[in-house]
Image 1 (spheres, helix red, strand yellow):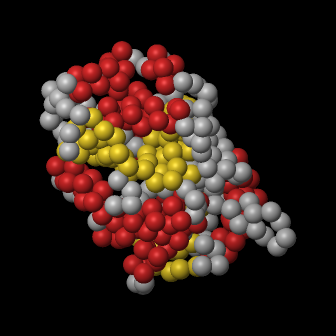
Image 2 (cartoon, helix red, strand yellow; image 1 turned 90 degrees about the vertical axis):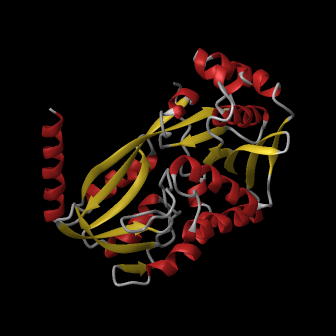
Amino acid sequence: MTGYLPPGPDRMTLFQTTAWQQAWQNSWLPTLQTPQFKLYPAAGAYQVRHVLKGLLRVSSLVPFGCHAPLVGSMRSEYWHHVAPIEKQTPSVEGWLQRALPYIKDQLLLRDVALDSAAFQAIARFATAHNLALLQRDESIAYAVDSEHQSFANYLSILGANTRLKLFNRRKRFAQLGAIRVVNMWPDTRAFIEQINVFHLARWGRPCFSGTNRNFVEQLMTQLVADGHRVDLSALMLDEEIVSVLLDLTVEQRTYNLQGGFLEDRFKGISLGTLHFGYQIEKACVDQGVQVYDFMAGAGKHSNYKVKLGTMSTKLVDLALVKSPWLAVFYRLNEQKNRLLKC
């Protein structure tokens, strides 16, 4: 894979948009009005009290817009919150400085790009303020460079089986009826109901419900109001929706937030992968899109993203630990896990 094009300090991500932050706070802050939580608007963060590994009571500070123990909000990636300090330009260091007085045991920063200026700033800050910087988890985010290659070139670098599923199966699919790819916007209700049907069949639970449904509905509306793009993409065979993808474009980057499709409907045709083919092709011809981003997370049966992506980067969950006892606990747990792998 080629080098990754990560969102940087000068390139706002979906997760730092006003739309994401406002929708998250409108949806999730009302649910955090219990003794287990404490809100710190001045820091742009909340504190959650939870039990770690069933043994240790911990108070964790978490940025607004991010999920945490006991908070099942949607995953946000490429963390690099910024804030101004005094008259300085907004920066990661500025946000961390604001959060510092409110760290009781630890500050949790999820899905930080390891090879990024944000990670380097966090490491410097932890050293300067005597905080133990620990990597708690990691994952790989995948994307397609849609700016520097044509769709034909992209297809040529795929494995034969992946290319078959993504593109070549269009001919067989076209024999079954009329094919259309449509944007269901602004009918968010119909789109969410459709993706929930697909997820119930595949995963046994809806994709969006409760607070997360409220959040994503507000998010999409606000993104469009702010000049970003929402594509409620539906792959249709005749008049039937057979696959859906939720694609959000911010700062020339299209984020594939979710998807769903009919399983095992047509022999030899992977509807989800086929649908990705249409969306990636669209990104390759759209001068307003530089990257089609699958982000992190694996599929149900395989990690399809590693086969479709042309770029990748490692994301890490970081803990900036103030409590000496907690730092010792983490290190002992890491040693135990390493011994178990031997």
